[in-house]
Image (cartoon, rainbow, N blue to C red; front, top):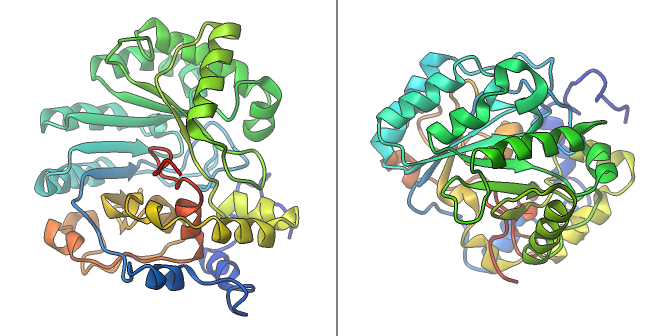
Length: 351
């Protein structure tokens, strides 16, 4: 299949990706479907717990084009959330009683109303902000250089992707020069108190494997990252989140192009961990797309898998409707339940 990275277009329409995910060996019965697995452990249908987190995608525009990006984000993407939809998100969040606002993209900071959104959220009493910052945005343009100060002023919890603590592996996954720009941004965040021992300004990093394999033990990886980044660059951070790559979008393209797709899916299925099902993020999180549509999770959003609620847009979202839904699943969900499990907050179990 021809690579579409250069044109910054998705691998295929979501329906085609879903057809790939539902194909052999699942159709031939060589591997159990995710629904079959949930039935075998008495978790079908998968139901939600209390809604705690609003994860809001502010748009697909980004200053980077990362190989593992499940959003297919990049500089040429035009999808962007309006201030009106942001206001609807704040109103729905207030109705729900959720305590965490998790802002993602693309690069969420590239939305022209990003700072307005954070400031308005503070006014309604949001006590836990997460911004998923790619780090390089901080040094990409002068208008973003003050982001560390802005984050600190609003007590934003910064979560940033750093594929590895060495130059080659990071630049191979995220683009030439990304590693050193990331280090520069981390130093700027450290200078504001982010990630420093005892500081309330939380700075966490995210690790994704660079190939067709599961992440290693999160605690061990965190220790390695902390030792290497401090030794070589004087960088501090709080936690490392190890996240499994989901077999969708650009990563699905990589798996198919490298003939790793079936082996990777076999790895995910054989590593299925029933304990991880208890805490998958779709059970306590609503995913809101740039256009205000709601989904069970960020990955379902990218596959355009609508949730089972009567309301399909954040403007109509009611806590009752959301809490009484059945969660929509497909084969990509194995990515969240393999090994120690995987979520936007890292591993889910100690297995």
